[in-house]
Image 1 (cartoon, rainbow, N blue to C red):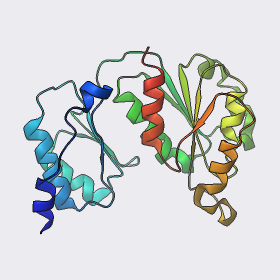
Image 2: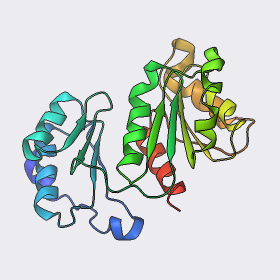
Image 3: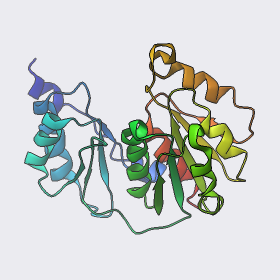
Image 4: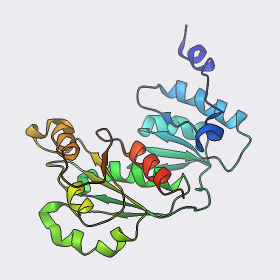
Amino acid sequence: MDESSEVQSLDFDWDRPRRRGFTEAVYCEGKSPDQLREVARQIRDASTDSSLAFLFTRADAPRAAALKEILPDAFHDEQAQFLSWPALPPPVTGTRVVVACAGTSDWKVAREAELTASYMGRETQLIADVGVAGLHRLLSHQETLREAGAIVVVAGMDGALPSVVAGLVEVPVIAVPTSVGYGAAFEGLAALLTMMNSCAAGVAVVNIDNGYGAGVLAAQITSG
């Protein structure tokens, strides 16, 4: 069976918006450009609700180009490897999601989280370079953090930032470990374990580099 026939049998979860309030996202890594073209065609041809945003994650340059062939008006963020169709986010509802990342090296994952929450209808704000090595930078954003409905904290290396943030605010903190760091960071495992062992209450942890999962959870928390 060739790639095209495999994709044509795809059973897209069209009932998910009714069940969960948002569409099924397409994880692009591991899919060929031809497979993604076929997925995009199915979405384009079957979608009847222009208010629904279809998200594509982990789309590197060749995969993004393939998707844009079928959905030329899609929004594409090259750094986050993120696409959305339609291009514009839905109207803002709920409370604001703040995304804070420790360093510029964590930006890709933080941006994925921010865009995911935005395309789920939340107002978002991204604060960069507020890692624990420069704590004064984080403290200068205390008012913004305390006004959020939920905070996504993205960090690699020692992974300490979520605990610090959670000690300053009363809202839920979603911690995202990244695969950033030298050898003993074990591609994010050290940060993951630190975050799971946080001594600050109210910290939930998603998988390594999972900006999409953090964005979804933050959007759900702030939906009220």
